[in-house]
Image (cartoon, rainbow, N blue to C red):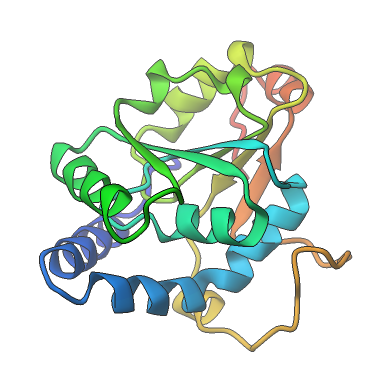
Length: 196
């Protein structure tokens, strides 16, 4: 029911392959960081991510620009996991060269991660099997863990109006491209769909 549309997966895969196979990886990462900075800032603010916290990003892909942004804006320690061998290999290459110290890439399925070890867990929108992953995390999450589940959105949402929103500012506007789930919410909805 909540599987990401195949078009999102296809476009993401092609973008990452092209960018990571070229010498343009850093400029392309910078461009994507600018395009998605508002969304990532909203996630940072909503989850309360700060320096020294641990963040797990499930489905980071070959170009984990969200992980780079989270670390750059907060100083949090970010682990990026992906079960696609090619995506992991390219992310690992970036981790060791252009973005040393920004994130730690790991080759594994999100289901094998222990969410209780993290302050925030972010599940990428292109992750396939979100319901199964959420069911796996329900019992494992600690009360301090915040779970962010990214949901598909329109291109207008990505390229929307400019915002002066900073992660340190409070906002009353609810984010539209992700959902935050606490442990209590996950447990209370254990028999039903967690996603809207």
